[in-house]
Image 1: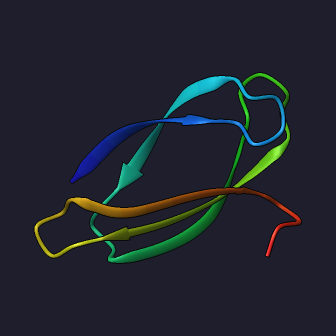
Image 2 (image 1 turned 180 degrees about the horizontal axis):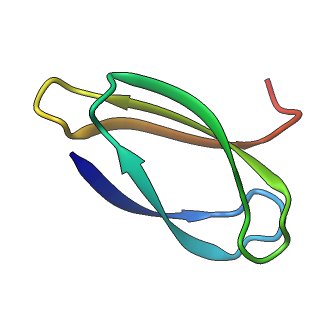
Length: 63
């Protein structure tokens, strides 16, 4: 259950595609920006059908 989404890096603003694994309902992880290499905080909530309901992208220091 993979889903692909385009995001903008909260640091440099570059658009990139992330691969989301919707086999878990809630996920929190860090993914490095492919352009500036800074850590992007990714929060994903998927429904029971394996579709992304919520995708939140933040810098590592945002609450």
